[in-house]
Length: 177
Image (cartoon, rainbow, N blue to C red; front, side):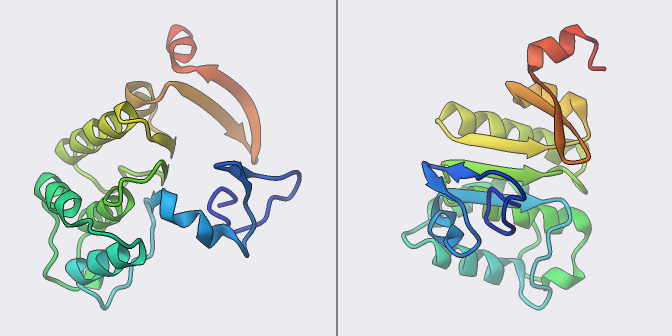
């Protein structure tokens, strides 16, 4: 939440792209950041297509080719109101919105929540692709296999404090405990 400027840091400061993040100024950074959460509140009265068009419009430029590619991969239901969709379909729409503008930084909180195993694999392939293109992905997850699959570093936290910061390989050598 502090990376996105939703809340202020309780101590110290958070910098993204060399800029101190504050709730008042975070909107300037949002054009470079994609975000999706497992419990993301999407506008229930819009269809998926309307929401994605709205989101794309907030970033300027044309995102139609990327939107078409992601829609083909995730196959979400876009013609019904979001409030009527399953959790999995809502999550697909949130993920498409996070990735469709080709952001430099993607922040994901429990991103595979509600996705079936096939969609989880499609998502993990997408993360690998954006990482290879130079994007940074911050991902929180309780699923260590997911983390081990796509993350180069693991930070373990307890009560909002860093308990351990390590390379994923080090975590795997310790049997993921």
